[in-house]
Image (tube, rainbow, N blue to C red):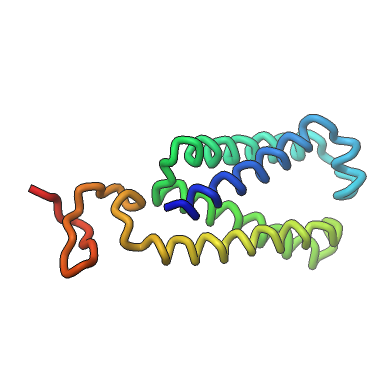
Length: 144
């Protein structure tokens, strides 16, 4: 579970800082990412990314990275990577977004590995009382 907590903390901080940057200093954000036609949309996405990052950080700080939190982490990273790649490819946004896509895909890979390693952790799946069977935990059965 330690890796899940670390990943949630890293991704949460990354998302929070990215979201805050777009909100706090739009001119420097646009200097790096390129000019935008709809500032309200940049700020909306910034607030949403900040909110998701905050959830990740709280889960990490509480040491409660459940499957639902992990799914939020993986799905948002994958969604942002796809958006980055598609819109760089069609010329809508600058190439610098491919750097973000690389980070997002690295997070997806790290989460995949961490979830595989934690596949027998009852706390991840919300079954803290699963009883061990044959040296491994068997999910779905409650201890008496």
